[in-house]
Image 1 (cartoon, rainbow over the protein chains, first blue to last red):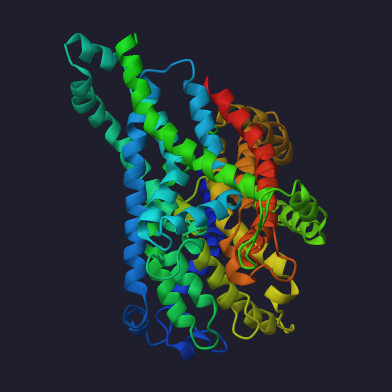
Image 2 (cartoon, rainbow over the protein chains, first blue to last red):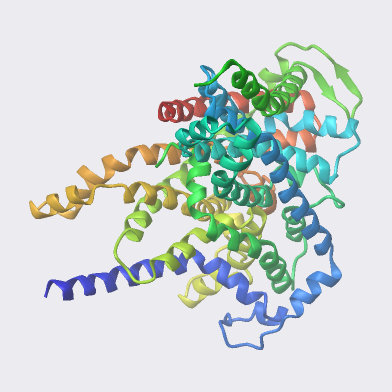
Length: 276
Length: 287
């Protein structure tokens, strides 16, 4: 009897949760559907849902007639490049703070976080100016460096929380057995730290991929990633919904997949350990 | 445990990160501070290195500043309200026993991974557009006049777009907090006959209060610098010009660097006020 009530309740919660879930997901679903319509079907009145002649011509169009391939290349280089550069700088720092904590470690960590909270407009013009001086405005290297710096606090922070979970006794045991610092890092820590590093990489590629302040303002064409490329669609009017949808799907699909894998890391990475 | 040797090695390992962030933070910020006291308008070729607090006075006393602060507060407040109330409800719902919980979670979280320019454009054209948007069809289907969201209610429209992006974030964090709730306590309250509303009011809400505070603070910091959504939809027109956007316009559009820099410094100060509270919570958790 009790079991029957539970099942009925469960069915009710299921229905409610799915309704909300689909509501939240609907704009993405609608974009997905529209990307396979012709431009005429895309604005048909009344709207067409599933039963239309599915076409992939929009995707072909986006690839052929625009800067899409360039923007995609730029997005990949900028997101991956800035993340790897960040990891390179952050791993030693996080390692040192987690295993050789000093009196100032906590202050340094908090100070790093505070740089993340600096509003971008506060440093907008100096950055543009310096980029002009160095003649690197609208270059990939500029965005790699800037996005690395923006996300560095998050990278350090995430790595630090992962490293701290590695028990110190293992290190001591390794030292007892005569491991030096290099061996300690190479054979003891790295294998244990790899999952944490991988999650950090994943989340930061997502953050860098979607960053839409610096990528829009510091690029024009040659280094413009997908964020900027899509923003350029805001100008044309008329028959372009299907193409806009196709371009949008291409821009968000890889990150959606990565995002679904990084749900847990999202909480850890963006709350700085304040919620457990 | 740490020897002198490993101490100095540690310092060496931290140095690049600290140096990079120091340079990143100090140099541009000092330059902005410097410009904020100058009359610097490169398009007119005028540069006067020291004009005192004139830029600050002009920036703060202009009506566009007051408007932008009001707009910012309305925008951030509206988004916070939707995401917190919605997030608590979604988190409680997702915590219930159900079929396909993992899939529902994925559906709910997805909007957070959509890049801001895409979500702004999709909402602007495919939902809000008065001629071809889905909302117009829906309104007509209900026998109502189509409503031009972005020109009739531009601020509300942007709030909807950004709230859609951030609701998943609030939900995810609050869900983490809900799941750490001691279920025995809830069951005991239920056995004692406490109605659902009191259980929420006296057990669940106090338990969530910390997580809610954190969500509010983190979101506020990110929301204060909303840019792409405004850039793509209204370009700052129709009362959607936030402080961030106003500074951007002063600096890059009208190229009044001095005035814009003063605005930038004010934005930094305002953001820091929020940041201090967040840092306190984070810092307490570090020990």
